[in-house]
Length: 310
Image (cartoon, rainbow, N blue to C red; front, side, top):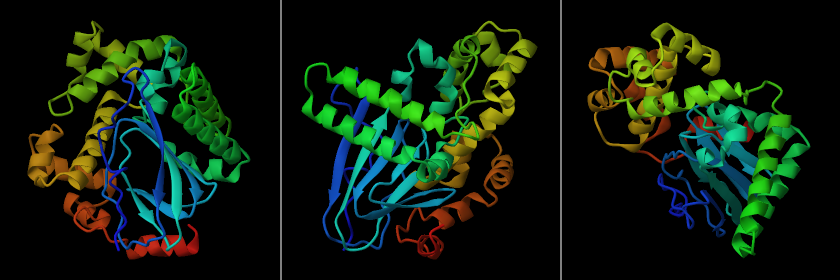
């Protein structure tokens, strides 16, 4: 029997309070088993998952993550992923979606690029978080946030906000590889509108000269500024964002590869194919087959990973 993931599989996150852009709730799957993943999906929000009981897995395009009671998982903004329930026992877990841009007050602008997931892969922090004593702290903080946002006592927003900031702080403490790299505050302020413009122009030419001109920056100055802040050139960043967007469309839309290439700013499908293969190591059609847009069944590779514990 197929387990329904309908409470989870929405790309658009609806907030009860549009001014408090966090949604945290508990999902309870009864004692049923499934041989299918939920559908591939993504959203702008950063997502935390804390398993209270049972066994499940989260799959991204790069890895398969087995989760059991007490485990915590973090998915970055726009990270393609899908869920799978293992076994016949009851599965209960917490899901927390957060619009990071809403929580990036001026004092936190230096972390904007890292926590929006556009230049850092937050899923790489799964292993260090799992192996550290901080996992228990993150687990308790998510539980506390759920309790506070459910009870909605007077001033609950302050309590939830404080717990969430502590959750981010906990994450940074175990980040030995500095995946979450802070940016100079002045630089962050200058680049934030540029990142927003890039997202709006992924379907067009999106040239550095045009972005720089719109922000009143000299071309060469803006190119150096961007590379210093983002750790990559403007062209590399735009290509990375286009490939990530292409992957999203390939797994969530029924459009042709040629149409998708146009949707991510390529006039030439051949150029799109070449860059896609360089980025993902396979053709777009192989990518779809590999990740099963039209077939929710769990793959043999994922089974082997789970059984081996990898």
